[in-house]
Length: 249
Ligand code: BT5
Image (cartoon, rainbow, N blue to C red; front, side):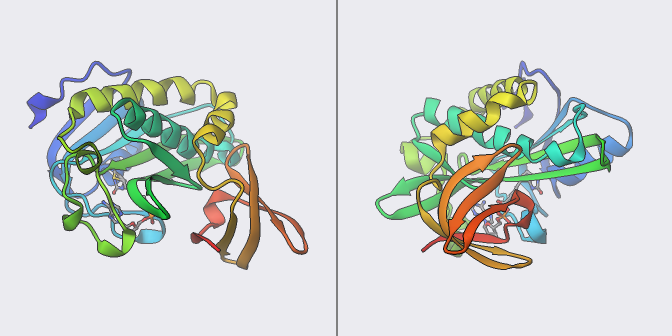
């Protein structure tokens, strides 16, 4: 319930027991001129992932969107996806869950050779090339949910499953928003923090892009969020927005 929250956050918080999508609501608030607002829901009935994929959002999760108006060019906005991944990874580790980041927008937990998806992040924005008008960073955390209620093909997990006990969602959300607030104001630190938690670097990967697949060793990421891949024919730099799918090879 809303009472569980009562966050002391650096944002004003709008809570819903159930809503179609917190990102959609945050976009509406952006159109009304709002900023520094978090939309938070216990359940989403029309949650969205990247490329218009479904995001399953049963009751018990932390489904939230942060709306803000950073003074950055459009091309820098992907850094906020990385900032969210770092913030949520830190909050998960403090909650006893050894999460890592798979480029560009997944937070995972490793079990042997397997990686299970704990969090998805969807960043949307509008504005002019030289300055964004607003950014909405949507963060979906499988908190106190049963992975059996989530799509199997995604190999999902949840914080309560990893911990073996439920999580205090208020504390977790508080930590997540504090970290995100600090990083969004200091984006120069984001890439370095991201590298610390990355599961993708040093591995051979295949990335599907609109221009075709790119295969090679993932060697680094660059501000504001592109992956550098050493391929047989040279170095390729893939922007986060061009990644349709990444898998190890
Ligand atoms: C993402 O997309 O991972 C971004 C998800 C963003 C969700 C947040 S929740 C708050 C805000 N409001 C919204 O409406 N959205 C944001 P993508 O990389 O495209 O991954 C989507 C894929 O993950 C789906 O096709 C499923 O296979 C899988 N999936 C769906 N729900 C899942 C879940 N709860 N946990 C793990 N995997 C899931």
